[in-house]
Length: 112
Ligand SMILES: [Zn+2]
Image (cartoon, rainbow, N blue to C red; front, top):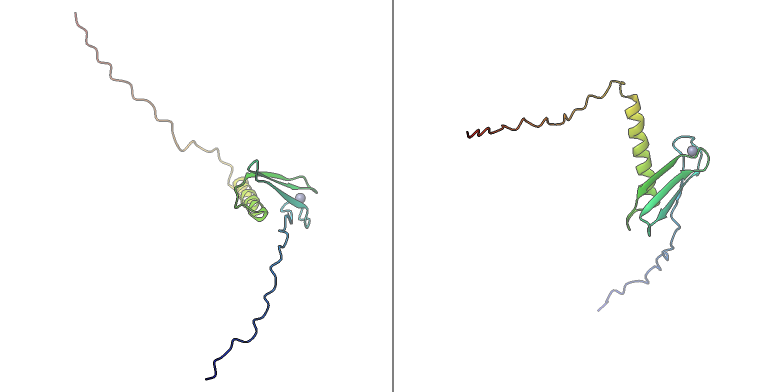
């Protein structure tokens, strides 16, 4: 009866806690690692700032938010802002017209 013994298990690589990257490349000045994201979970806010061109961005954080999330949010926001600027500059007609209150039918019960 040759019971197969599991050969010695490889000692898995001890999971090291890698410090999360909190510096990124700036969208605006393109400097590497010039953007720093600071997460203040206590306050529930994140501050993103480029120390080269002083671009700033602020967002809300929750317990799951990581610096990279703020960074990608910033990219999205900058992207959207840029697109808005590129949109043909036509005066934005207020698409949602304020509903004009219909004149209340005055019930004239003129009792005389
Ligand atoms: Zn910058």
